[in-house]
Image (cartoon, rainbow, N blue to C red; front, side, top):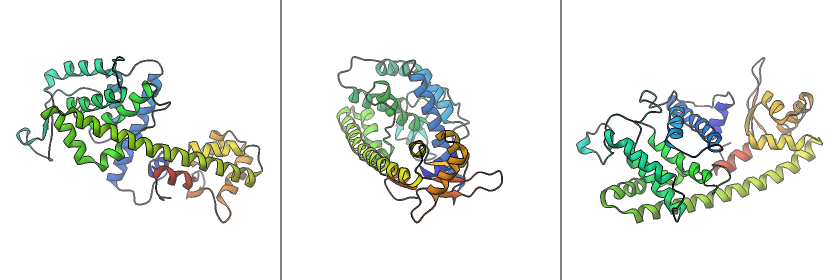
Length: 306
C-alpha cells in the first residue's frame, strides 16, 4: 500500500523493478475504476455496461491492455498451466457465441432484489462471473472488485472498502478447487461455505484495523494539538489520515491551511526525537518533498513496513 501511495504522490520507491511497477500500475487502475463506479452507483444500478467501463480502466497500460479492454471476448479461453492446450485445461469457459446470453442471465440475477440471503447471492454472483470469464484478461481483478461493489450498492456497507484478496490468495488452491467443483459436480454448498467464511474472516480483520485506526486518530489528534498549539491542528491530522503519503504543496491545498502555518506544522511533525512524519524524498528546487505517516500505514498493512 505504501509503495502505491508513494507512486501516486509522485515518488519512486526504493528497489522498484518492472514487475513491481506493473503491479502498482494495476492497483492504481483498480483505484481509479473503483472511484468511477462508486460515482456511477450513486445514480444507477450495477450493470454489464458499468463493468465494461471499469474493465477498460483496469486494463489501461498494464498486462492485458492489448486484449480488447471493455469488450467481451470473441474467442474461446480456458484456465490451466501456462501454455496448455484446451484439451489439458482445468477449466473451459462458455463458448463466445453463448457468452452474451450468459451475461444477460447473470445480470438479471445480480439485479434480483428478491433473493432470501444477499451474501449467498453475492457468493453465486462471484462464482458465476468467474465461470463465464467474459473478458480475455482481467476477470480475476474484476471478479474481486464485484464483492465490495455489491455490498456497497445494497447498502450493506457505507463505502466499498472490503477486499477479499488476502483470504483468496492465502487459500488459493481451495478457492480454485471450489470454483471448479461448482461447474464439475454442482457442489454449491462447499463453495458458498468457503466464500461466506472468507467474508466473515475478512470482516473480523477489517473491524480490528478500523478500531486500531480510530484509536490511532484520537492519540495523534492529542499529540498534534499539543505539539503545534494551532487552530489548524485537526485539519492537519485529518489530511494525514486521508493522504498518508503526500507532497508538501498538497498538504497546503488539501488541509486548507495558510502556507506559512502549514510549513511550520510540517516542520514540527517531522522534527523531534519521535517524528510523526517521515521524509520519503527531500524537496529540492522546484521538486517538492514527499512525506509519509508511518503509524497509519503500518496499521493498514497489519505489519511494520515503514
